[in-house]
Image (tube, rainbow, N blue to C red):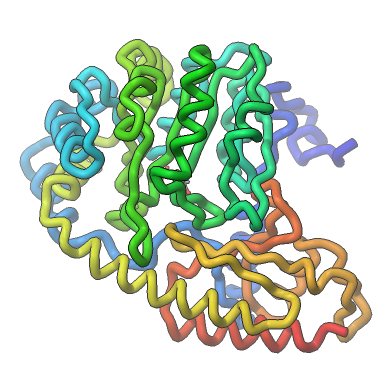
Length: 410
Ligand SMILES: Cc1ncc(COP(=O)(O)O)c(C=O)c1O
């Protein structure tokens, strides 16, 4: 049994729907790293899931203009008409998918979109297929909504991608959703049209299953990878697909908290019911900024993408020369997900054994002063995730420290 939480000790027992869920390991590691930094330790934090770039000025200006124009009141429940129109145009322009305005919803981050979708659709015991490694919130949100996460391991050898046979096997009469995320947090793996096709064929054979695709990192892809979204590839699935996206990563707007989705009208309506009793509406000012982001000049995205690609190349090369670490080249996002299997069983200079990826990440934090997140936080061990959304100078220093720490293991 888990040790009682401080609230339990104080006489409070959490509801069963959240009892098995803890504050995410990513948040815990981040807090520990920040605390060490405050104590003066020279910590490099490679844990954050946000771009280090600033929100573009033209987006900030959109917010300032909205404030001065008095757009500071409650808005329509699930998005202003102006933002829904901007999203509609974005889906048509960039994704080749047409959504009517009542098939579009806006929430306080893509995280709330996921939350609204699960709360609106899951009955207790409904199953949700989640390819693993997965973004931690997927399984936690499903559990809060009293669903059952069905975790399907996608190996590094399979490019961390779900295979059609695995999907077929995972589907049962209780399956309500399949959650796909491309490019992926944490693996950076992405599905091309050819990768998606067999999965969509499986879904065509199971009409009770809905598909949620999380396209959050669509603008951060590398080399000649061509991003596609399933609703465009397979129009026959469009009426049971929720296409999730947001401004957080592409426009460096994590703090503005705007996410959105296109999907079947009945689902969108049910999601609005959840939102109406949770937050009433997303922030009016952030919605205005998002209109500016989506309707504005998109050329800066290419520069940022090029900068992320340089960092990806630096990190992948730097990791793969370290004996005991293997890093697959990710197609997108700003994460590497590397195996540390070759280091397990080794000992630190002061005699601690590195038995798990968590041990390895703890060792990197305490001895190399580099904060990274163990694969266990994403459901797959022994791996570790690096977020390379930081300067090349800091990445170079972090890689040299990691290499030194690994060499020191015996
Ligand atoms: C895969 C993925 N989806 C969704 C989100 C949520 O983004 P937001 O709530 O900031 O829109 C994140 C954030 O880390 C993510 O990594």
